[in-house]
Image (cartoon, rainbow, N blue to C red):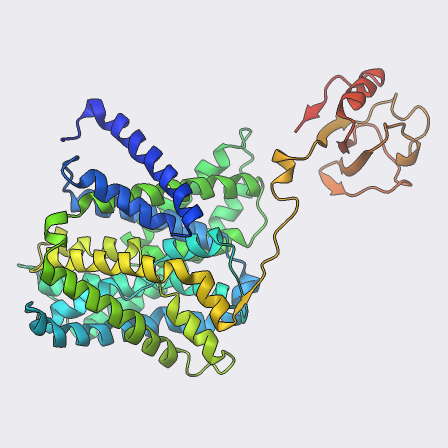
Length: 496
């Protein structure tokens, strides 16, 4: 079935609807929702929809990864990752390189035995696409399962997955240029210089754009609060695109920009966090569906492809990733053996490797379809094997801890009968006295915040109030309070 202008919205709506239902089923079954999103794409792509655009998939993946990495950085507290900064950076750089070369050497050695002839550069390209852990998978699974972990493992895993894509990206781009017909490959020295420039420029640009976003949002004073989220989204794309234009790594830049923004005070920050949470889920769903649609099921199920994919997945999960992690963490003695084993296990693969596997397709590298299919199989195995056992493995290794959940997080909107209102102090309120204790309010009603000339403070009974003070009032007796407001001549009441 060909997607036309007339049925595009209908098909898109059906895909999103089915994906959301699949996510609900995944939560109940304990399966990563991202895996079922892929399944939705494969199902609709199998002789139902005609979709074969690696270029469009790659473009959507770039947009989605920018938002996911920024949102992940925004949700990460610097106070949590400070103690794991150095091991996280080593895992994100040395760990990726070690994984790529160990896995690439294995693929080169075993591929002839499986009936597939791959040169070492091709084997290394295949390994490089899978050398980084997937930020979308790690952020999604750890936070959806609310998995608490000892030894600061959660911030370590999130830091690694959020910052290791640039190294894998550079490896993939260099190898694609080397193997693409008609392209000249850069030398080893040039490649090293390019890597240093991309990482350095990306880090500096990310920090600079992050600080610029904080300053702009706090100073611009927009009347419509909803536009702050749009402004921040514009900064995300500006950070990625401008950094790429000046030969920096855009993925690293948006992650660092997210870290900067998330760890500074912002006006309407709660609104922006909620907005990015929703947009992140939307782009994840779209990205995984498109990746599923791109799969050629017939070539994916070829016995040689299936065998190479399965062998690669097993070797990477049980040998390549553990070796890379243990060598990378060798200088850091504060991690126990069980902690290192858990870090090795949560080397989840997801959308990022599949997106990187579209680069050989776009540039028509030899065996590009084989590379894409093998990466797809490895991703499915990783999400099935590792994604479903994140909590179980943590309990088995004794690195799990109960994560404290807020009793009030959803109560403000869902279950609390208490209501917030805001009023301005007038003469009638002060008729019986100008201290808070002298103001007549219904029972089960509290003044919890005062705003005076732009300054906010929590009042006490002895706090003296003045005309024009703005009071934030919480009450269980909302109807009674509204009547009381009318008696005090307060008609302009703001309700939350």
